[in-house]
Image (tube, rainbow, N blue to C red; front, top):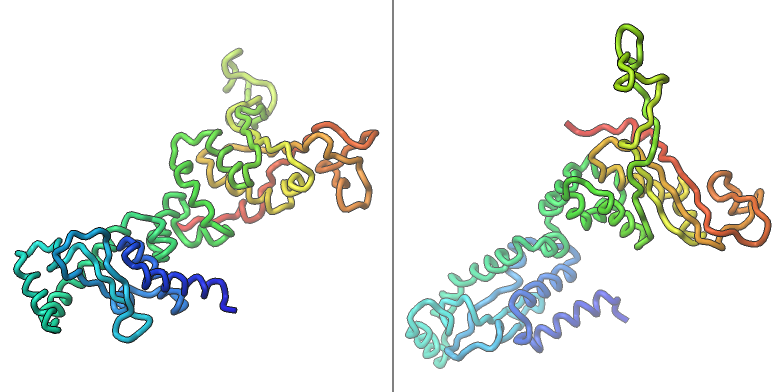
Length: 348
């Protein structure tokens, strides 16, 4: 049996040749480009496509019902196609030229001649590829998915702040971030947008951002209280100690409640935890700290089992209790900066 892709391609060709008038010009052009690319095993350039797909106007003065009247193979080559269109023609019902030009061509055709028509087709032929290029120019999905134009993909990465290859090199599946461009370009950055991105990235997992979490910030040496020198105004700038309570520099990511299996994908040594921290770091435009609080669904926890495959990692999934199950429990994971994060080098 033919592979699925091969059957799909042959089905497209058959439908176009048998029912070409049922397709719009744009759709027929897209399908023929897809068919030819699959047949060749690579994306074809514009020059190759212009030779493989020719378009000419419909020689008639009748009112057109559709964009096309037919799609057929040309030049005795099954890989070359001729589309007959009912618009943008130098002759036919949509022609800007006087009607007698079309009438002369019809008289010529009745005598089984086509010299004049062939000459006009040479002039008319470049109009249709230009029309398709104009249509596709601002349709990003066409340029990126179907035409695989790297320039358009590069522009989208620029909107994400990942415009250079060096920045994307360490990001597996960086293309998946493109769907969040709208949220990445909303300013100021919001907790709701971050929660939406993380929830979508993890399959609609419940995610909540707890803002203004209390933390402790270290007081710089030059701002510490020093009697008679600085920081001596009581009630204004004087503090005892080297740290101060702060609610402006930290937040918490609350994930769940989750079942046992997805709960384990949030462990600090997991790919899911790494991905979450990566996306948070990309989204933030301020130097904020965060930790991750993962909730385990009530009834999912099991007593600690030393040496077992699960429920044995201290601080991650171990709880000591009597009975078979426990109510909803949680685990807090601090974000630990990896060596790559600390030593990351950005291009000039």
